Image (cartoon, rainbow, N blue to C red):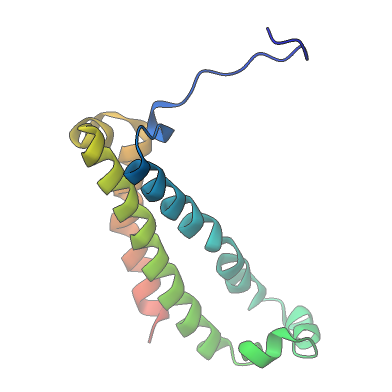
Amino acid sequence: VKSNGYIDPPPRAAVKAANTWQMVCLAFSRSAAYSLLPPLALIFLTKCKATLAMLANTPISFFISVLNAHELHVYVGQYIAFYSWVHAICHVFRWADQGELYDFLFHHRTGISGVIAVLVTPLITFPMMF
């Protein structure tokens, strides 16, 4: 127990980074994952017509045509597809550098859920691109 009364949780095995290369891979994978949150929110907003009408009068409309849902879906589909792969590839590079690739991909819930996501994401994002 620390002096502030909290107990530090043990480090998660899937998040360890032992050298600079692993830290870079972890930084890129996390950045890619967090950058996906706004596009995912935009996908849900395309079903909210009143919100889209409001967004059309904001600076966002200079960058994205919020009233053209098809154009938005194409852009977001491309973005999600690309950065999902960046996220996955950075994790694979990091785990391979640690010598734990096989263990994480097939025996750890983080890797198994990641493999499932990598297989399912193209089924969702590719139709959004066209």
